[in-house]
Amino acid sequence: MYSKIQETASWLKAEMTTNPQTAIIMGTGLGHLADEIEVTRSIPYAEIPNFPQSTVEGHSGKLIFGKLGGKDIMAMQGRFHFYEGYSMKEVTFPIRVMYEIGIKTLFVSNAGGGTNPTFHVGDLMIITDHINFFPEHPLRGKNFPTGPRFPDMHEAYDRGLIRLADEIAREKGIEVQHGVYLGTQGPTFETPAEYRMFARMGGDSVGMSTVPEVIVARHCGIRVFGVSVITDLGIEGQVVEVSHEEVQRAANEVQPKMAEIMREMIRRS
Ligand code: HPA
Image (cartoon, rainbow, N blue to C red):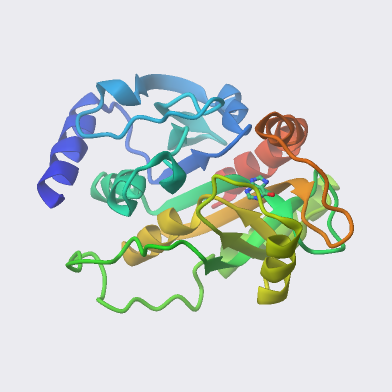
């Protein structure tokens, strides 16, 4: 695996004309953040050696290099989910590559079902912590030399970046929630009983991504900031039918606010 990561990183370095230290993973329905990027180079995943290919509708599968908030950035439009059948090593492959090309800070976004009874559809939840409910751990197996065998996770989401996001949200009059993202494998949305269980376990937003990537980023010493867009509710007594299209629509509606926060954070961090 390590030689594949290095091969991909060398290939990308040869293609790159910028030197980004910031990467963004644009989740479901949030790929339009790409419209805000002054793109210098856009590479379909299919052209990148060893890169997995994304299969879900609404995840277009491109690596974008350019400027956002006046800084060089690299963005993943489309990510790899465990439910698609990828191994955890494949899901987190791009993060290992990011580390090799010099990424220091990672911004992640996702869509989630809100299990916190104070949440509404369209809320932006700054991720303060997560619960790993995936059936396989991304660091299972021989340890990579980028980090310890038993990595500390007491501050998976950088407190300084959370403070900065709060400051920017306050300045811009954007209301934000804070909460715990619980990552589970999917692809089913939750039954009412599962939402109830996740709420009691301490989750505020439930989704099918992000946790594996964040674990590997932390193992590499990459700082992380994450936002979960609440696209549907998993609140007791309020659970209704949910579809991928609805999730995308709800995410689309709030993405200008989210883009504003992300852009400003990148400018100031
Ligand atoms: N559950 C799991 N994943 C999700 C949800 C949800 O309710 N909404 C968006 N992604």
